[in-house]
Image (tube, rainbow, N blue to C red; front, top):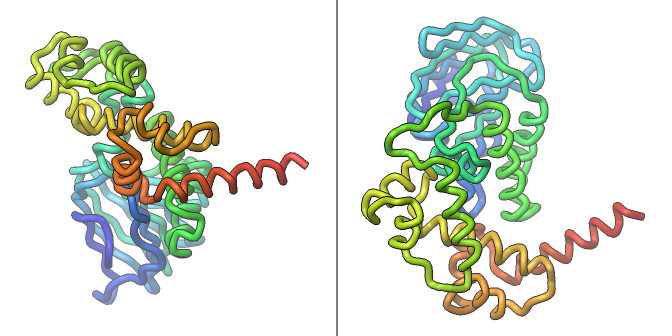
Length: 301
């Protein structure tokens, strides 16, 4: 099947399961979704390079799952999930006509979300049997968008994917209880973020951020990347784009003005980064803003 690296799935007869939805829209959301179905039983094994979140969706199907010395034999209800963190070994079998949604998360993207939530270094929980109906609803929305060729647009996908990641960090991760060598603390990250946000329209040097953290530029870059999941330069771009989106959606500024006050060289520079990270043009972003306002107006009547 087409799926995350490190995952193998086969039918009981040795064939491949049916893939109903797969992939992610343009951009760098760090979230991909796969929906698979299989008649007559399914076997899987994984040592994934990405975090895998499993949601069985077929009723009356028995799953036998194994991971890190754990074993679970159950018939899951709607909203049941299992989590296999990147690098963990897991395997299992489904007895019956299995159908499931699988969400794959880039570890670096989850690290960034955790850092933004003041939980740097948070570790994703690993378990074979849990329950989170709200998270399942988000996964189902992602699967529907994928099957529908992203008809609501990449920005809608980004918002749902962000909600999924926020929920994972809030409800299914464990924060660092003690300071760990080689990881920046949330106080340091807070000061760095505050500095960047206060100087978005200026050139921001990694050496300056390293000074705030009390580290050499070389060591700081390594620590920051390990903690946040992306290099300092990409983090600065991340905050610049977030602010640019806010300003464009406010409808109060020309695009060239937005680019300059968020630290991009010009409108073209902002456009290139917006397409790369979010998969949309500045014009599409403005159109998306108009659609939002129309929906809000209709819903308030």
